[in-house]
Image 1 (cartoon, rainbow, N blue to C red):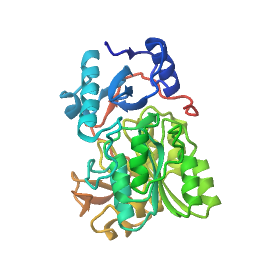
Image 2 (image 1 turned 120 degrees about the horizontal axis):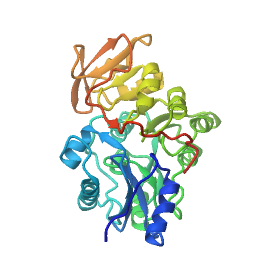
Image 3 (image 1 turned 120 degrees about the vertical axis):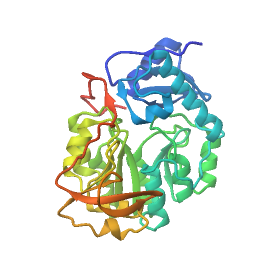
Image 4 (image 1 turned 45 degrees about the horizontal axis):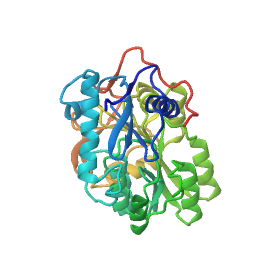
Length: 358
C-alpha cells in the first residue's frame, strides 16, 4: 500500500492531520500513534507507518544519520527514511507495539530531556517525572530507569491509543498510568495526580506544539505547595506567542528547529547548552536541574546569576562534563549563540498562529 503523504499549509495540527488521514483511509484504526520526524507528523499502526504529512524542514543535523544526506530528500526519500526509522525502533525497542521496552539506564541523546530527568532522580532532586509514552499516554514515572526507558528515543508524541501490555509493563515497573482506558496525553492532569499522591518535586515535559498552558502547570504546583520542573519540548513550528510563554514560565526549553525559541528564550536564558540544537536553561530552578547532569554539579550550580553562560566544546572555558560529554562553559556577552549547522525550516513556511489545539 502506498503511504499517503498529506501536503498543505505548515505546520498542520494533529486534529487536522487525523481528519485528513481518515478521509484518505476511509477509517482510522483503533491502534494509532502519531509522532513527528523531520517536521512530518507520522501516523503509526501495528508498528507500521500508515500516513504522514509533507515535511517543511530544509536541513537538520540529525537528517545526516536518519536520511543519509545533508538536505531534504525528495518525497519518496522522506517516506523511506521515516519508515526505516520507525522500523528500527520497532525492531530494537518494541516502540508502538506490545513489545515496548520501558526500562533502561542507557544514555541515548547527549543532552536529552529524559537523560537529564534520569540523572536528576538518581541524585535525589526529583521524586517523579510526568512523561508521555505511546500506548499509555501520560505516565507518572517514579524511577530513573522508567523515565529513560520511556523517553530515550521518543521523537515526540502527539496522539496515542492504549496498548494493554505496555500499560502493564509500566505499572509493574512502579509507574502510574492516569488514563489507562484512553491513553490520554494530559500532563497537567498527570502532574496534579502525582502531587496529590505525595510527590513534591516533579519534572514534567510539556509538548510546546500541543498547547497545554504553562500557567496551569504553575497553578498545580502552587495548589500542592510542590515544585514542578517544566521541560519544554517539541517546539518546532510554534509561534512567537507560544515561544514567549515558554520563555516566561518554563525552566528548560529545547529549541529544536524553532527560531522563535532561539531568539525569545535565548535572550532570557541563564545558560545555553550547545549551539546546533540548543537547550536553554531559563530559571534558577533550571540551573539546579541542569547541575544534576554534570559530573561536578558545583560547576553549574555556582555560576554567577547575573551573567549568561554558553556550554559548548567549541569555546575556551572551564571544563564540564554533562552526561558523558566533555565540554566547556564560559560567560558570554549575550545569548543566543547560533551555529551555521542549526536546523533550518523551509523559507516562508508558517508557524502555528493558534496553539490551543490538540
